[in-house]
Image: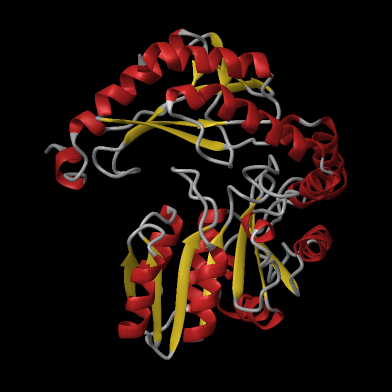
Length: 378
């Protein structure tokens, strides 16, 4: 029996993925097949995964609290560090309450399932993250997708299909394209149709504004109809995720979110380290350093028709799979790690390089990357 053909018939042989075997060797550096490359692929936007204060906070917590959480948050895993981190997040982002969960995927799938039900109608941007797509499948109500950032189409859908309870679901900064949702427009529709807006700003928090993300830039932090999701696995350099909302929503999630109730909590070292990361993000210098790198890339890459995004994600859309794979190989030969992104992660005909920028990258490395891209795109 051909197990692959029998159990995974929807995965063409040409698109089978392989784990790349990457070792991180320092800020913005990785080792692949014995070669050290500049990292233009990771989500360590502020270089905090290697920050000495963050690492020491984790080490101290392991020495005093042990390694594992040993249970879910409703049993033995509800460490005081988690509550302190939640209070600090809520204060920083201007919401009544916050809740920390094991990962962004766990959070988004559990969140939409907990808010769902047969009387709930869900309306999602077609380019939301896979975790939100899977969460929509678990929410038990009707689901509708609207074309990317087409809020006129969303308004027509809401007029025709709104239910007793409605969820509007979007990324803040979209993870493959780096563009930004219009949260003000979505919240205006939410007010009109008595909906909640679930916005996953995993790639905006720590990057945009003073670091508080797309909702800060658009002036909607703390909006009572906004359920804001963030992650520690990107700009904070760690692991785990968080959601902020009205206190009643957060308290309801503790009752109904199965990915919280039935998952082992984060090890205490993680919230301890993420409290240090949060302090460093709030201080602001790393956010400003990242924004300077983004501005530098945009200025250098504009002649290539690149650099249109204000966020750290800068897509180089090449179309066919082989074109993206070839470009990735050429960049690797030149000393840069930027793997090809192919369908089904992105739409057919939109294979790309997903260049990500970091405060840890020296401008000389960015200049060299742009020069290499120029050679590839000529």
